[in-house]
Image: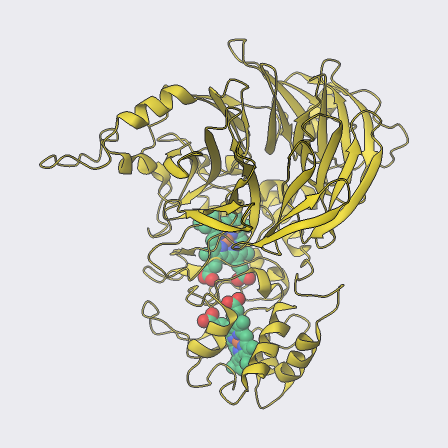
Length: 625
Ligand code: HEC
Ligand code: HEC
């Protein structure tokens, strides 16, 4: 039996695979669980797992390696947390119908659930379990709720895509990690940040600027002693032409450490090694003594264990700036604090890198001295005993293994950096895990050197040939194969590209946060008329339902880096509400900039005649697609 599973699942490389017994026998046909979150029960005997594609919480007896119970949820879980007294399990769940679910940890009963916003991605329970804070990713706000009454206490607008939060010991300073950068991709600095929200004042109290190129932030977590926050992210070298991958030339992976009391970034440390990337860092846990920081690498199927006091010591010893008269030596170790985010050897001696046997580790929690890691794609849980050396992660399956469909495999490959030369990146490094964007410009080699292009969402890409802004690939199938070869620098079996095609071709847009109960607002409805007005001309080039005619035009958007060709492929406008910045070179931060600032001669739709309210309606319509 074990052998059969190993054959079916190449991801389970040689690990001791122990089959979890009887997970709900009636479950037929078996579906994937896709664990994306994990917390320990108060007595640390059980793990609660959020099973993203099963709309459930799994209760796992850790010692017995057994799934005890499966608690159904009204929507797909995104994150879990326990109330301070351990009596309640809180779940952030759902997409446009996003909610907080409250379960009784003993009985598993769903006590209540209330709607909080579009795609709640994390949650923190505080004030002795009275309040819960939730980032609503696509509403771009953080909401605070009274748990007993389900009443909203506070809603603070924050920059785009708040994805993870951590609360300081003062119970009022909230650190919010944003998934993507804001503003033009052609600006000098392009990076997603961490905002600090003052929950007492109900407003943003500051912004921590991450290094240039920081994007795709994932978890942010506080050390148990409350002194440090750690946030993991990709650190892209997007300004370099994409000619190679060696030494982190394109994408690197980093953890940024924050001094909580001082509200300052200590530094950003690379998680890769000189010739071996550690792509797509995702989940974070701390040991109870705050001395070790654990990070999962969802792209390389690894766990990093970092010795924090030693690392802090070394960081503290570095001068902020180079002493006068000392010439920089680029090949030697970091000489100043500013060198650290570029130093692929800085963690040597402070970090242990543990290869896991599952695929797609996205969550980790500490059970005493044992790290419990949840693998999204292989439906496995792995236990890593930190007191034992050498480390031997022990992995077990969360249920009977479903048939691996091409869709599922394609999604897994898209997120897998082990198919990339030296593991530096996965497709998800630039397109995020759901095949959208990173907000950056990249100078890909397919259309010549020196003309960077903004990364594109792949929703409808397979249905709207040609591909790439200059149409240099006939279709998305060709772009997929070119991506494997020229971006991942890999030669892979043809079936992998096929599987990627199947998954990508099946991507569906998610409902816009601008819709009201699923319908366009009155303003968007008026804007639709304007969009379709022949005099304005939008629908001529952007006809529904895909909002592109598949042709290239010069709409006056060529910039300083574009050469002879000034005609760009007409992009789809579906999900345009979430794919800023806009235009082939990311030179427009907002839709207003596309239509007004970058359209002074009306070459891109005749909008100069529109009244301000009409323009607002048109933009509202675009935002509803
Ligand atoms: C280094 C960042 C990066 C990585 C990694 C990356 N892409 Fe892209 N991708 C881009 C950029 C930038 C564009 C837009 C280029 C343009 O418009 O000319 C793009 C465009 C595409 C398109 C065409 C979209 C359209 O409709 O025109 C497809 C398909 C695609 N990528 C698939 C993939 C796949 C599959 C992988 C992994 C094998 C991958 N990409 C990895 C940056 C990246
Ligand atoms: C003549 C054809 C044409 C017309 C008319 C036209 N568009 Fe476009 N649209 C394009 C092309 C081509 C691009 C890509 C330009 C670029 O990448 O620099 C584009 C890009 C866009 C974008 C940015 C999309 C992205 O993902 O970056 C938006 C938004 C948009 N158009 C909306 C409109 C609206 C609204 C109108 C009517 C006012 C309109 N367009 C009229 C061809 C057209």
